[in-house]
Length: 101
Image 1 (spheres, helix red, strand yellow):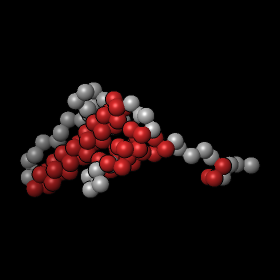
Image 2 (tube, one colour):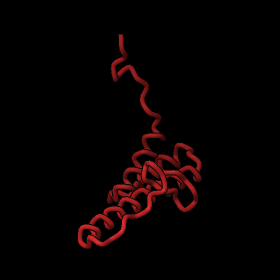
Image 3 (spheres, helix red, strand yellow):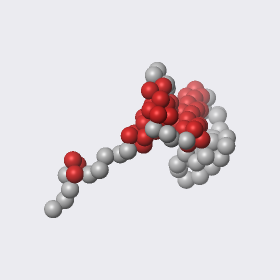
Image 4 (spheres, helix red, strand yellow):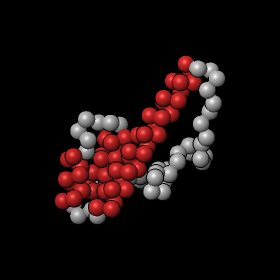
């Protein structure tokens, strides 16, 4: 018989906090992940890992904004050129080289 959802192990609280922090930043959530930052630090997550999560989330947010702006500009001006995409998933690395996909 298959396992039900309640039989599956839950994500570790630090993983949930990282996901929540990243998605909040990427979505421009007004709480800005302050609660998650506290949880991650209290859980002993290394600062370099927190910094990487923040960098990746900001990069995704900024890239999405640029693509939305480009789509709007393209619709407003049909002579606009298409942006270059660096790989098959359409994401580019962060300034420090972190992959976002």
